[in-house]
Length: 353
Image 1 (tube, rainbow, N blue to C red):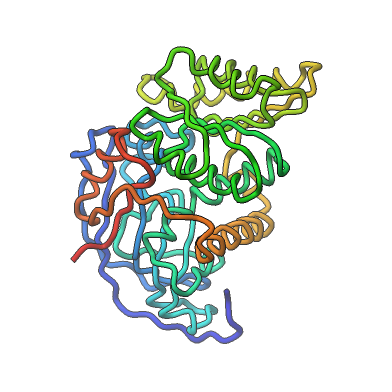
Image 2 (cartoon, one colour):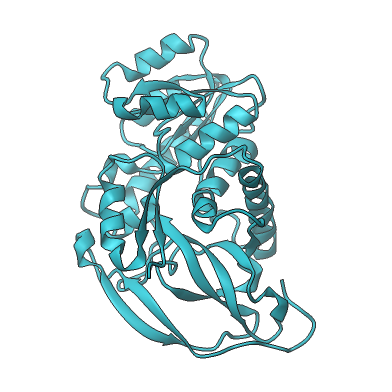
């Protein structure tokens, strides 16, 4: 991403940002305007074309995300945008081109500063809102399915929350790889889950796990569980010998008060214990940021995986699951809608007028 010349392009940029001031309801989000400093060496200014609401922001507003920064801060886990200025050492030819990036925070803004090394090109012809649906969701789904669980064609998996942002992407990637999918969702989303190629099961059914076992009596190759809580044991029991449980969230405890790290640490401990059992099964907690201490390797792997997912989107293999498009100024409404659990896919935030 970096060039060999010190040439840079920069101009005063005024950014509109959505600020999370503390533990508040969605309508407690604040809007601020500030002048961004000129991009430093290896940085660019990225104009936001699309960002979105993930489960991380829903946890952050409760102060429940595992390693969120102290309040106040600008949320926004990922972004698709256009480079408008480059700092010293960055190729000026990047200006005007569209990229995707994972940021963890900071993307709920009209403009943001970002390291050029974190940019992943978006293929020509792919709309910003479509690309946004598969940035953090796509990387998470791809790495869990292909890097962590390594499910082979012909296998069977269970996806909890198959109508959600990560879940719907995971279903599509698995079906493309020749994998059978059983997906949980509320009854109103079953048609959508079927359209993605999965067999739906009602997550509100008290016999949900028994129904899944009847669909896969020999056990499944992997379970992808973002819920955690007591049901995690049931997910573990669905696995055949040699199967893999991938836990990637603690939605069951999102409304609990207390230490934000405790639910995750409890899951870690349980998964670690299960890995010592002599049954050939394995259990893992997926964190997209694992391995970031080896920054170059982390960036290369993330770029490779997101490039794969964006290419599948461009080729029509993946269908973007957009629940709604809401202007940045109405970010509170976007967060509230995402938390309502009434929509399928991802709530996308766009610049607006």
